[in-house]
Length: 344
Image (tube, rainbow, N blue to C red; front, side, top):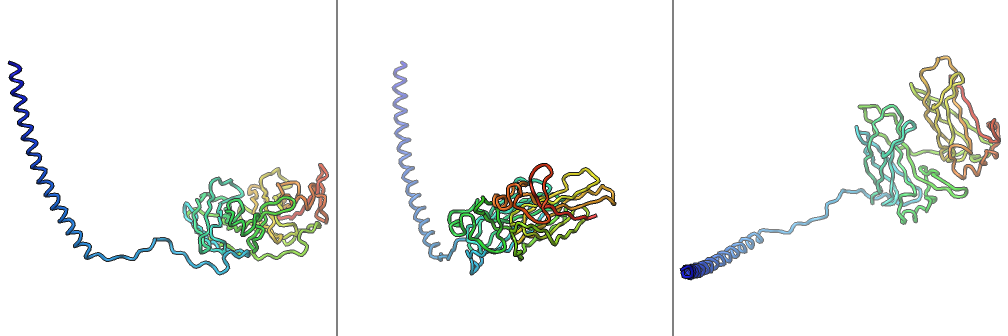
């Protein structure tokens, strides 16, 4: 009984399957026909659209660059730099005759703070220009120096092949000694733009081209210091002067208070290519108005991590120094240059 019922069910299922397959075949034929018709209509539409199309001239989008200077790559290098101060950044624009892909470094520094991470680099474009942004330290109780430089450490082999492995082939007013051993010097291009920021006020700084006036006896062992000028504001002395010390020597300038025990009112600065120097030094505002105050300028070959060629030239203990400004350390046989001005 159960078998019979099963046979009938199988027969019915077989008939249903046959009918469904037949329906599917019929339906599939209609779908194919419809698809073919739609494809033909689409092709006709595309053909009609193509009849109305015209080719469009295109070029690769890029920022517009100016013309390269005629003296691009000349070893007598120059640049012009503008820095626009904003609330949280500096916008730096430069134009130069440096080779394209020369790497320029921009950093913020201060005598009163150690800024970490406030520096960036940018490569010179085909037209000699460069543009970048630098984070603003947003401190307002110090003089900030924005240093723009080209050093050996970040340059490609092609750039060093042109300007020299130590940038020794570069010339011009922006070239400074950056490092040395006893025989060879390493150079850099450098501009420093200094100002005292004021919160809520923004300035635009521009670089200046130095006009060096080299002393005839620069490097002579009979050292002199001259033409020292001092200005002041509510917090600082601003000191400038000239000497015949070698470029790259470090001098120490200190506010001396004979009637007080004080420290921290000093600065170490580098002698410029022509022997000039400039520094700013904090002074205390809580001392007696009648108290004696002096500015002391010293050069010690054995202090302040002098460059190797400076130490070699003037002696590891300053023994090669001569002239009226030479004094001897009381504790040992070291000799140094000492110059003092009374400022109060």
